Amino acid sequence: MATEETPVFQIQRVYLKDLSLEQPNSPNILLEQEQPSVDIQLGVEATPVVEGIFEVAVTATVQTKIQDKTVFLVEAKQAGIFEIRNVPEEQMGAIVGIACPQIIYPYLRGNVADTITRAGFPPVHLAEINFQAMYEQQQAAAAEAGNGATQ
Image: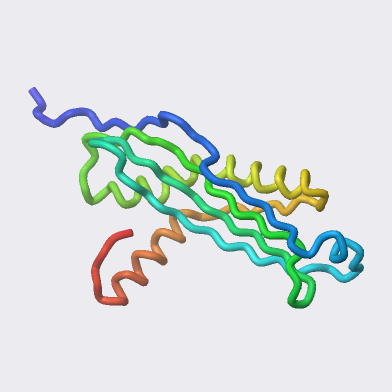
């Protein structure tokens, strides 16, 4: 009989954890004809909840500006609760850093585009993300920093 238990990876829930929209210079900025610049920042975080249960969140910040004035700023955090059990420790980083964000990200993309559209702007569609490459870059940066920590 095998003493090792079967690995478990299940989605318990996907939810919008945080969402904010700011239009600090409206309505005057809405009359501008100039094309705004768009800056998009993404982040991933994983937090243990209880034994075998993790919350993984993907955060997006989308800011558009005309010159130095903000047109709009959207900050959104899409999260998921995942049951992850009996997985070798060396594989956990990749699961919470790649597999979980890949599941959550499409929901985040939809919520960001919908929020921007409902604010009266053309939608900003977040590009597809290669979470494996992002994870590998974070690991390389951590190794280069000499701390050897996994993220």
